[in-house]
Image 1: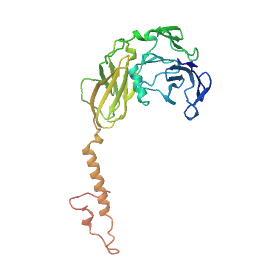
Image 2: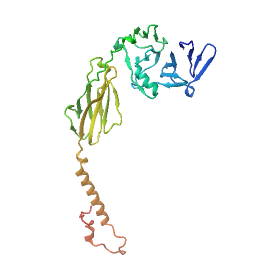
Image 3: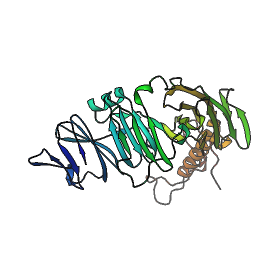
Image 4: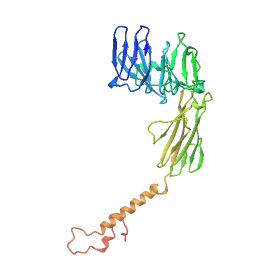
Length: 332
């Protein structure tokens, strides 16, 4: 339940949002009869009615319900607190931490509801006394008359003044490096590109990124061009594994973001080639094809012609002649 500056009160139920304007109730049914986020908290700012719960965050505005999409799949966790500030930022308290959506990001999403929002996350590494409780209290985030935000967490309460937070974001993308590659138990430097590896194609890539603010929050994505069609989200893991790569040329590409979600989109890459085994080489395949062709033609030359008379013997010389330009020894 939450109210707006005009005295209207909003209630969220399992299948509808209800507005009481002081004289009558107005009901707004969720899409398909169920919003599917298990609404736990309601917050209002002008014509924005925000709903939060186990399934994320939904905005109701101008008669429409819209689910917020997040670039980081860990956001926002189970939501128990919501505030849209006067400056146009959206703050969320959830089980993944405190989420701050900058005003410019929120505007992009308001113009395109399919846009995936990039947000800042704060947790115990930033000084929070734990994370939001799984159940109570609700709401776990409130705004004071002076604009200060208060958060309830598992081990206490915390506050922050959003107006004084500007300028603290780390805007420096982290430099990224491919340290080394391990193939068949042997380590190769990631700076010696291009590399050539044996035909088994079992590789381990080790990479890193330098960010000294909160290195535990550096995130990675990688892609093996020639195999992967999309980026693989590695989270904080600094290794990638590939097995049974066929002979070909490849490029391993890795990118990273710093503690505030600023990505180094160029990243680092390593070019390499998987060499074919002896039986995968062109000359061996050609020799095998030629042997098969000779065997097939030799078999045909030993088959009596259907136009030959009954009991007529085919001259022996024709049995050893496979055709123009081919001279093969019959099998057997």
